[in-house]
Each structure stands twice: as structure tokens, then as C-alpha cells.
Image 1 (tube, one colour):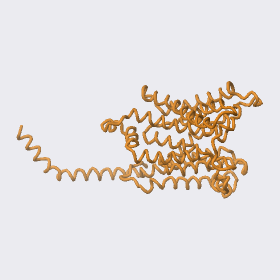
Image 2 (image 1 turned 90 degrees about the vertical axis):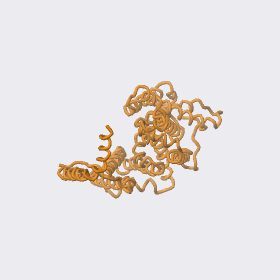
Image 3 (image 1 turned 180 degrees about the vertical axis):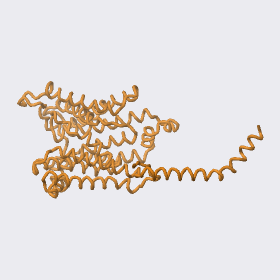
Length: 386
């Protein structure tokens, strides 16, 4: 029989190298998968890892996909480092998009550039409101934030469907469930001519830097992490565990809502039922592959966007289903969890584990005579005083 036994000391090297190992294992499994589907594995790997970076335009599209993933992952990192498990960032992304879309629909040709700021703020507030529901129920009712946040994803998606099929439906849209195209003045400014890369990329990178400073260079960031991971210790130190929950969820919701606003006022330019693209769920993988570190999440967001674009290209060029994107994402998460498990635990035979336990017990018994003379005088002195 085999059993998992905790390692006495974790390897710092493998803690950071395991995402790379997980990626390599994912690639090897992907090669086998392409071969099993009757496709050339080399062409398959080129579609996923070369085509998205082969030209300036391709890199721009890669950044378009990576921007919302990175922004949402940054917010989730605050949650996960605070031991708050917000799994419903997708719902906050959608509700932020709804709020931002509602403001964008108010604009006309005479509206000024200030509308862009209003759209982004509406997205942030929308995401915070949706995450605030989770925070309130966790704080006041001790509700499980995993279930509440996940269920609210479906509520937000249904609300989006109601709006685009009902009150906000474009009357001149040939009966398609979508709003009218937003006015040009509402479009998020782009960084380069002929590219869809917007200032959202700059916001994401600045956000990564700000998060690094907050987590590792401020007392508030330290209090935030301690408040979630060790509530008793945080109370002793004067930190508020309740505040940590609220800050984590509101920050995560604000980030997801901002990503939703950037998406609908950027690449999409309108609200449709296809706003929920799975970015909120994929960002969970981005956060963990990046080790909840702002710099690591930049690279993992780029990797995850490669999977998105690679899945689309695999469908059009190789005749493979687009769901291959989800397969690669799942493989990466599964292999990362497996690597992390083997970093923290080692596989031992049960007999060997019992022998090791016996040796530990024997060593403790052998050490008793050494400690006895030290404690004996204290005991005798106590007895004598009585």
C-alpha cells in the first residue's frame, strides 16, 4: 500500500519551477492528444505556441486576450492570499459589463470623452456590488463564499440575457439579441494604430506593479494576508479578519468589473449574450500558475491567452473542436496541482512509513533520560515546597 507523507521541508526551487514542469507535461499530453486525433503534433503545437506570436498583429491580439485575464487574476490573488475563495469572478465580470454597457448606451454623438471614464467607473462599481453580495453573506450569515459567488455567476448571466433580449435590444438589429453598437466616443482608446490593443493593457501592467507594492511593501498588505490566513493571530495583532474579507472581495469584484467594462467598450463594442467568455474562470488558473505573484501572473496570463487563440486556430485550420482550449486549460491546472502535491508530499510504502514512525518513537523514548535530570530537580523542589 502507498500513502502520502508530508515532506519535512519544502523545496523553494520546485515551488517556483513546478509551473514550468506542469506546462511541459501539458505539452507532452497535448502531443499525445493530437496524435490520437489523427493530427500532426508538430502542426498542433505550432498553432498553439507559435502562431499567436509570429507577427506584430498576432502579438497585439494576444495582448487583447491577456488583458482581462491579468486584471481579473490580480484581483483574485488578493482573495486567495487572504484565504477568501472567490470562484465567481465571471459573474462580477458580467455584471460589470452590464453596468458599463448601460452607461455606454446613454452616450450620443455629442457626448464628450469623459464618458470613457464614466464607463470604467460603472464597471468597477458594478463588479464591487456583485462581489459585495458575497462579502455581506459571508460576513453576516457565514455563508460559503465559494457557493454564493458561483451561483451569482448564473444570476448575472441570466440578467444579461434578459437585458439584451428585452429592454436593451437593438430595434434595428434584425432581431438578434444584442444592444445597438456603442457610439465611437465610448470606445476605449487604443495604443497603436491598426491594432486592438487598448489602454487596458497599461492599466493591467500598472495594476500588477501596484499589487506588488501593496502585498510586499505595505503594512496594509501584510495585514490583509494575515487577517485572512490567521484570524486569531490577526486579532491579537490588532488586524481585522472581517475587514480582510470585505477588502479581498471588493478588490476582486472591482478588478473583474473593470475587465468587463474594458471588454464591452473595447473589442466587443456592444452587449451580447456572448460577453461571458470564461475569463473569470480561466483567471483562477492564471492566478495559481503565476503563484499568486503579480509578475508570475503576467506570464501566465499570456500563456492562457495563447490557449484561447490556439483553440480558435485549431478549429479553423486543423478541424479540431474549439473546446480544445478548455482541455489545455484543465490539463495545465491538473498537472500543476499534481506537481504541487508531490512538492509537499512524498509517496511512501505503508510498511516503510510505519518503520519511519517507529524510529521516530524510539528516538523520542531514547531522549527521555536526557531530559529527565533537567526536569526532576524542578519536580522535587516543587514537591518539597508543598
